[in-house]
Length: 431
Ligand code: GLY
Image 1 (cartoon, rainbow, N blue to C red):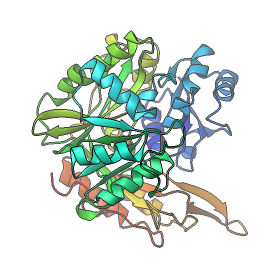
Image 2: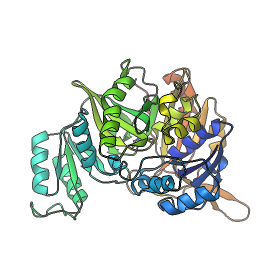
Image 3: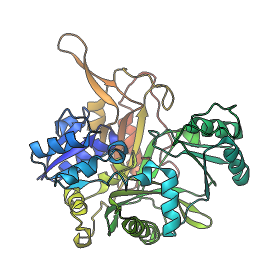
Image 4: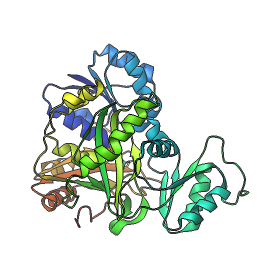
């Protein structure tokens, strides 16, 4: 099968690896990264331009387009590819609003009877103050729209919560209480959900949902869950502590009701429904939906998948998931640890040289995923690999159980060097 994969991060490198596990895959990718470039022919393409993506897919005779990140999905790239008659894994622009607007996702959950945190959608600071007062600390403040992993602030500090809300509305912190924010901007204030978080990815074709293995990611920047929120500093799978039957419960009480509600609205959801969940003292609650694979959870989930990923994704794209055989998984575990550039998740310093990747890849039970890297000419014939983003590399360790996978990941990580970089040392340490 000839597949065009869109994206350039760690998630896409992990997807590329899993797609290539099926020996029949011929892989193209745009724009890709140096790691993906070892597995795929890279194309120069504006991945936010649906017509350009459809034209490239047609020109290269691809059988399936897989859209990695949320931005092209929300921009309607999957619609253009579908309209060209090419199967695509990823929802329509309308269905991608489940991630594109937190307020829309809440509306769908309410209509579908899906358990989630109470929330208030605000357009003024007066509404924000009322909602912060109503729910109390810890405060959960979410930008309604896409914010490249920087939209959510969870804090005990009410002033910080209010400041983030003001920024989401495009207002100064000391703006008049009833001043309307920038037209179209909204902020969602939510009740805090206690309990451990789980990421469960469901492969969907509009009607059927097949869950992948549950994973957990570590969102805070520093050890012990300290520091600012990030896109994710590490992850592991499986979750030995998760209740038996969790995945089926999520399919029955979350994914299928959402699929039915989206179909009822005339915008069926086909692609990956990322269910971000909290297992609270009052039962399972949805924290958020995303409409694409999670990063870095994909690195551990797909490392364990033994079924063919191309066959699964093409079945979703063709609406044939009901006939798909049960998925097969490794009996073991996978742990990933993110190496982040200096400054991440704030202002990042890029351009630092990365060394040690070959040694890390040669380390027992481990492989390295490129998240934010690029190659640069360094004079003469020398080509350096340098940091090109906030999250630079993900080291994935595999083993018989989570502690063994963790040991493999950290042993490999010790070979990597990037001046000023940081990583968490407690990923999957307490399970
Ligand atoms: N790891 C969180 C995300 O992918 O959004």
